Length: 61
Image (cartoon, rainbow, N blue to C red; front, top):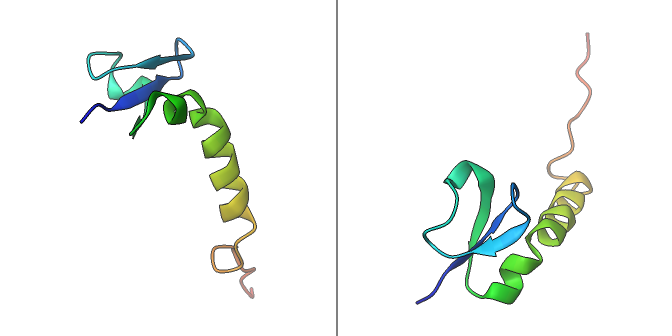
């Protein structure tokens, strides 16, 4: 099975022999999914930010 990563350093899709893991998002099952990695990350962050189960509650002093 092929896997693809998105390199945030080079803004490009890479295969398994690409940049170090610290510079990549993934793996993704298709090249097309890897191409939209930044958009996917943004969508997930927005969903988490708006999830009432994960919002921080103010603590009483």
